[in-house]
Length: 146
Length: 441
Image (cartoon, helix red, strand yellow):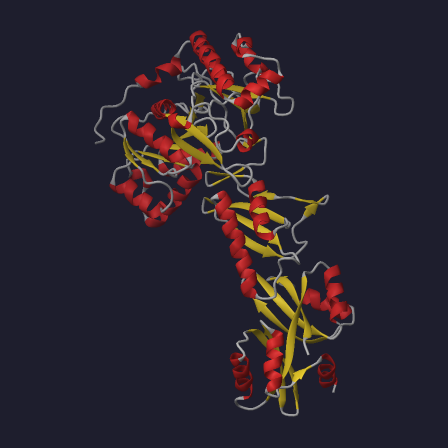
């Protein structure tokens, strides 16, 4: 259920984002989705890639500090209240959302969001009890390549 | 009360500055003997170092024998922290001061009541040498506290009979208001801070040239003739260089006279030598080397042949003022890696200690010193490592905050911590350049 996300430290300056993307491109690694958290001085690039171990290795070799973080990919009904219901479930389980970003695909009336929770296991338990679809690596890949 | 008649050319307190040289040497020798005996009797480190050399105080038969004595270095103060070099019991210590050590702990210095009186006398002679007199209004913008600058200048100016404003450092607008409203005639601060005051005065439309201010007592950091010219041209005051260091006494070790030809060392109290920092051999007057000072009057903490790490020379010629005590030339650099930031001593090793305390291991870092609007600023660039990298902005911001706090608590300086990507700090031959000093003095 838990997916591996790569977080990369970047300095906030021109070219800082394109360089790691080029490195991944040269290694044939496709970025499934990403998000950038930024401050005035630095940024954290969060990446979802299928071959995360390979991506981590090439980025590391090129001098990047890369951290592997566990995240969840959730299918969220694409209708008013779809996200709110999931967040209520999370709230009741006393789990905290650290950040969230999206995939750009839509599948059978569902959007796909990447969540970083402070306690992913507790989140999975609570979400599955409410029949929220928490996607595993294979299912995620299937949807992305459809 | 600026209506005092023009002051006499020489203040009575300056008499010792003019002692005939043979008499001055006699005074120095008599005091040196007493100082060596006191340190030998009361400071175990000094005694053991003499014993290693098979020396006793009786082997000091002339001033030239000074060269036989062992040096004292800053590490000795650190290794014996806090009180190990004291030659007086704590019951006789009237005051402590402290300054930056090379690592986490400061170095501590102590004064008996008599030491404080001597220090005050040295400061009175300093102020008198540059023409400060009873009736002057002295604005003391040196920091008060553990730093020797504030209290040293304060008691000296009071004892001279001047009226002292103990305003301490910072808050430039208030400094200017007080300067203008109180009719200040003498200002004590770092030269770079005065340049900042000049700039601010311009912005506020205050014409320094029209104020009664006439003397600047500037020290606690190196400065140049170029800075003096700028200060004097822009403010129409006379800018004088004062020299001192806590290990010896604080400000008042040496001070310029009206000829502004380099600070005169109060040699009857502080015996100077200049040595080659590599060979440690004494150098003749007029040759540049490291200044070594021996206190001749200190009771609580005698310093024998203290290596100041300041590079200077003892002037070979006599000053036009007629003082027999020698001058040092301007101090431009040091023989170690100490930086002076806004008058505060800073060693790169202190920054290392601060980073280590937070991160556990030492990251690559670089200290960048610059001068913005005439104020020293430091930026500490720290490379992010896998150990400390965290995936959330909040955690990284917190790391930054912790690093800044650690630096401030160890050095007393607020630095701008900047997290940078790995391998962005330039290394030369595998070793990173730790300090980039962009200041142009």
